[in-house]
Structures are given as structure tokens and as C-alpha cells.
Amino acid sequence: MKHPEIIFATRNPHKVAEVQSILNEYGIQIRSMDEVLEIPDIEESGQTFEENALLKARTVFAHTGKWCLADDSGLEVDALNGAPGIYSARFAGVPHDYQANNEKLLEMLKDVPDPRRGAQFRCVVAIVGPNFSTTVEGIVRGHIIHEPRGNKGFGYDPLFVPEGYQQTFAELGETIKNRISHRAIAFRKAATILLRLFQSTT
Image (tube, rainbow, N blue to C red; front, side, top):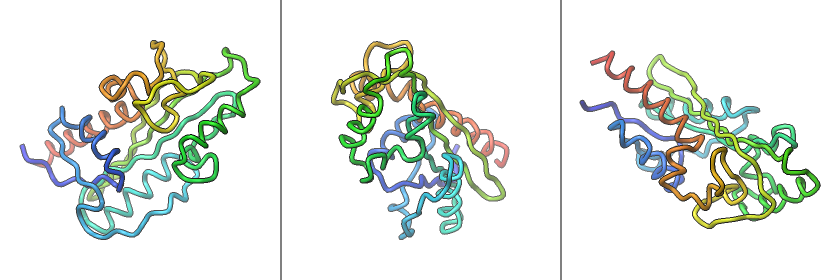
């Protein structure tokens, strides 16, 4: 069955590839913002993951009139009262400076013992279409180690060990991460909703 065109509200080709690999099992194809038309950069001005995801999805839908997926995600550390949270990508001040972000996180946790280094990755996905808007979320629990390990991931992956594993996300690699990650959980939920919606309109 041919599904309506779906735009993924990102310009990050690595994120597009990761999400597409998750959605392949559902027969859902996505296109990035840059493949459709020139859409202005969207300022993530929300105060929660949900607000940011909905802001991005609604903006792209308003420009294209097509079904849209958007996500916002980050790391929430228990000992830091949920920080860095929505500021995960720019925790150290410069957007997507992964090394600086990791160094700042380790510095803030340097006196925190292992039992209190619990954390979670959380991803919220917004689905917006004609007369439809909702969000779903995925969470993976784990803990923060004391120094980076692995080179297969990005962001905080070298510091995060998910529950049930001994390796960090950056050591586990893409295949396992795409099965257990917060983003995988959230986008699988989104895919289930999309398939149900599309089947009900055919």
C-alpha cells in the first residue's frame, strides 16, 4: 500500500538515515526538509521536548501541507535534576560540540558516586497532518560512567551505558542502538500510529 508523503523535520542526514532504518520495517519512507522546499530554520523555543517537537512539525506542515514527523530528544541526569534536558545539544554553549558537552557533564558529576549516576535518554516525536496532531515518547534508562568509551556513536553515547548492558551506546554500535534506543522506541510508536491512520483513510 502506498502511503502519503511524510516529511521529517530535520536537515541532519545522519538522523534521517537512522530514522529511516527504524521505519523500514513498517514500509514507511521519509524525506528531509531539504528535499522538499526551502523552509526557514526553526528556532526551538519551547520549554519541553514536546513543545519543541510540535513546533517543528507544525511549522513544516504549515509550509508543505504534508504529513510531518519531528523529534526532540536529550539526556536527563538524575543527579542534575534532569539536566541537560532540552539543552543537551548546546550544554557547553556551542551547539553540537559533543566533546565540550561531555567534558562539562563529567565535571559536574565528578563527585557523584556510581549509585547516584542514573540517567535516561528521552525522545519525543510529534506527528502532524491534516486535522491531526499528537506526540509519543521513548525512554531508555541507564547510567553515566566516569570517562568516554567507544567511537561508534555521537553526543553523549560514549558516556551512557543502557540498563541490561555493560557497554556504552558508542561501543554497542548502530544495530543494537537502533533496536533499544529512545529514538527507536518513539519512532516505532509513531509508525504504528501512522499505519493505523493511513489504513483508516484508504
